[in-house]
Image 1 (cartoon, one colour):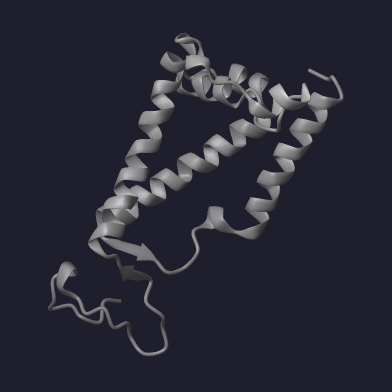
Image 2 (cartoon, rainbow, N blue to C red; image 1 turned 90 degrees about the horizontal axis):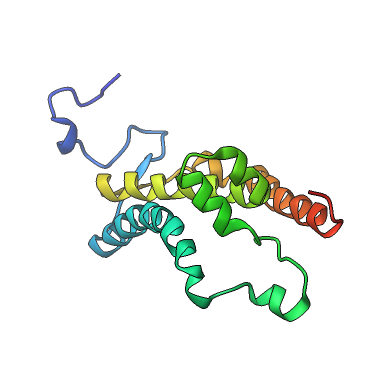
Length: 154
C-alpha cells in the first residue's frame, strides 16, 4: 500500500515508513555515469569478440599458458564468449563451461549496472547473484572445469 498516494512516484520522500530500511539509495552523478558505461560497455565488448577472434586475437594470448604450458581456468573463455554472442550455446559450453557460467554472471552484473544507472539509485539489498552461495558455485564451476581440462577430458 502506498503511504504517499497524493505524491507522484518521482516525488515520494526518500524516508521509508517507520521500521523499514530504504530499498534504494541515490547515486552521485559520476557513479551513475560509471554504471551506465560499464553496463552498456560489457555487451558491446562481448559483441566485438567474434571480430576480435577473426583478427587473430590481435597477438594477445594466455600468459598463464605461455609460462606454464597448461591451460588456465579461463582458457577458451574468449571462444565461449564469441559462441554465446552468435547464439551457439553448445559451442560455448564446449569451449569452457566454467567461463560460460562466468559470462552469464557478468551479463547479470551488466544488467544490474544499467538498471541502477537509469534509475539513478543503487539497490541497498544485495542482488541475488551476489549471494555467497552463487559466488562459491561460480568459483567451484571454474575449478571443476579447469580440473577436467587438466585431466585431459574433453
